[in-house]
Image 1 (cartoon, rainbow, N blue to C red):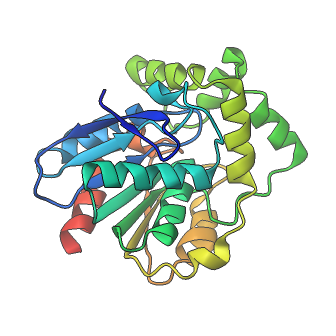
Image 2 (cartoon, rainbow, N blue to C red):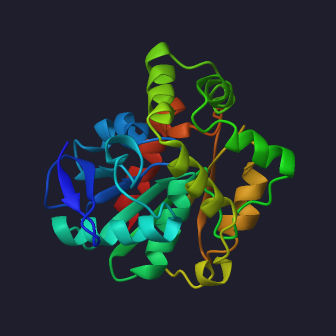
Length: 260
């Protein structure tokens, strides 16, 4: 995979597919994941669009990069990637934690973001998990048994073996300090007031069977916060909609981009 250098010199990896000359689509993965989350969706869209997916600092093939591993730092790294590849303007597309990063990036760099697509989004207000749920999430870091049990709950139906393997390998590659620091960052986010100022056209895609980020939660805490957002429920899908319903996600993104 090609690399670029963040502002602090850290070397981070990305994937770059599809024809240049159209508005770039920048894909941002979620927690304990990597750019492979978007591989199938990108394959569909790369026939017409330039598609770029980053391995965030500490994740995937960027997992040796130093911290901090916080949403704000991930947004700064996107700015470095955009400058390095001359991607301005672009459509930022984030999944889960990556959707929080996309919102932060749209606030930090409104000049660079022409559209936002937020899939299974972590809201800018974070998520007030119970102490028991926090313990469960933290217990997945560096623990394959716990992580695999948690990942099995993130799809509506049991996925093919290659998808299970992709999810498990991505989670296993995340160093424990990265997983814990980034988790504490996204669950305690507090920039909803800033998110309410986003004027970028936005599409929120909420999987029907996502828990605890249900469609009602996504609408109230993300779509209703960003004025004028389009909201769509992805039927027959759990949290990992980009892997479980890639054709649906790709088609929704394509319609959104074509309408910009």
